[in-house]
Length: 225
Ligand code: HEC
Ligand code: HEC
Ligand code: HEC
Ligand code: HEC
Ligand code: HEC
Image (cartoon, rainbow, N blue to C red; front, top):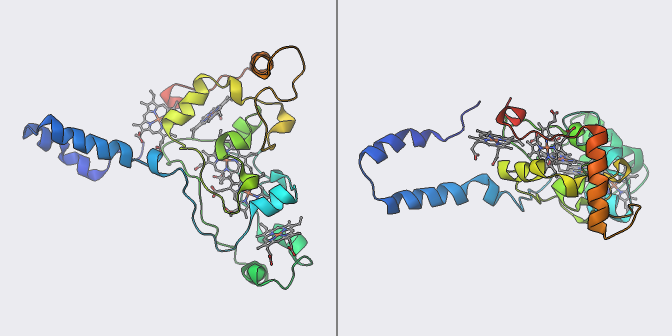
C-alpha cells in the first residue's frame, strides 16, 4: 500500500509521549476527520479547457453516455473521448464557433485536449467500471444526474465508507442492464409484478444476485490489492 498517513503523523508518538490533553487530541482528530477528502470532494467542479456541456449533449440532445465513454463497459477505466469524437459533429455543427477553437486546434495539431480529472480514488484502492456497469449498477448511482450538469461536479464522496455502504447492501442500486445510462432511473421503475416499487426492486435484486452471482467485496484485499 502506498503512503496512507501524511508524513507529519510520524511525530504522533512524540505527542503522545508528551502527554497532551485529550482536548488537544480531539482538536487534531476533528481536523483530520473533517479535513479528509471525503468531506471536501463533494461538489468539486474544476474549470475545463473547453466549455463542453453534458446538459446540452447528453441531456437536451439525448446522446448516450457510451457514444463518448465507449470503454466504460469493457475496461476498468471509463475513457474521456478523443477530439475526433467531437469532430464527428463539429466539423459541420458550429464549425466556426469561438467556443470550439481549442477543439479545432487539438484536431489540427493532434495534441489532446487537457481535460481536468474530476473523480479520483487514491492509487492504493482498486476500482473497476466494467465490473459495476455490467452487473447493472448505473452511472447515476455514483455520479449523480450528469445529464443535468453544464459542468461536471462530483456528486458522491467516493470514500471507503461510501463504497462499503453499497457493497454491504447493493439491492437498491441494481437495475436492468439496459437502464445503466438512464439518468432518472429510480428503484423499482418499470419492473413487472405486484406491489410497491420497493417490493418490486427487492424481488428483482434477489433474482439478479442469484443469476449473476453478485457478491461485492467487503474484505480489505477486495479493494486494496
Ligand atoms: C459528446 C461526448 C460525451 C457524452 C455523450 C457524455 N460525455 Fe461525459 N465527458 C465528456 C468529456 C469531454 C468529459 C471531460 C470534460 C468534463 O469533465 O466535462 C466528460 C467527463 C465525464 C465525467 C467526469 C470524468 C472525470 O474527470 O472524473 C463523468 C462522470 C461523465 N463524463 C459521465 C457521463 C455520463 C453519465 C454521460 C451520459 C449521461 C456522459 N458522460 C455523456 C464527453 C461526453
Ligand atoms: C452528435 C453530435 C455532437 C457531438 C459528437 C459533439 N457535439 Fe458539441 N454540439 C453539438 C450540437 C448540435 C451543438 C449545438 C450547436 C449550436 O447551438 O449551434 C453543440 C454545441 C457545442 C458547444 C457550444 C458551441 C457554441 O458555440 O455554443 C461546445 C463547446 C461543444 N459542443 C463541445 C463539444 C465537445 C468538446 C465534444 C466532444 C467531447 C462535442 N461537442 C461533441 C453536437 C455534437
Ligand atoms: C460504482 C460507482 C460507479 C459507477 C456505477 C460508474 N462510475 Fe464512473 N467513476 C467512479 C469512480 C470511483 C471513479 C474514479 C475512478 C478512479 O479514480 O480510478 C469514476 C471515474 C469516471 C470517469 C473518469 C475516468 C475514469 O475512468 O477514471 C468517467 C469518464 C466516468 N467515471 C464515467 C462513468 C460512466 C459513463 C458511467 C456509467 C456508464 C460510470 N462512470 C459509472 C464510480 C462509478
Ligand atoms: C452503488 C453501489 C456500489 C458502489 C457505490 C460501489 N460498488 Fe463496488 N461493486 C458493487 C457491486 C454490485 C459489485 C459486485 C459485482 C459482482 O459481484 O460481480 C461490486 C464489485 C466491486 C469490486 C469487485 C470487482 C472486481 O473486479 O473484482 C471492486 C474491487 C469494487 N466493487 C470496488 C469498489 C470501490 C473501490 C468503490 C468505491 C470507490 C465501489 N466499489 C463502490 C456495487 C457498488
Ligand atoms: C469496497 C472497497 C474497499 C474495501 C472493501 C476496503 N477499502 Fe479501504 N479504502 C477504500 C477506498 C476507496 C479508500 C480511499 C478513500 C478516500 O479517498 O477517502 C480507502 C482508504 C483506506 C485507508 C486510508 C485511510 C482513509 O480513511 O483514507 C485505509 C487505512 C484503509 N482503506 C484500510 C482498509 C481496511 C483495513 C479494510 C478491511 C477491513 C479496507 N480498507 C477495506 C476502499 C475499500
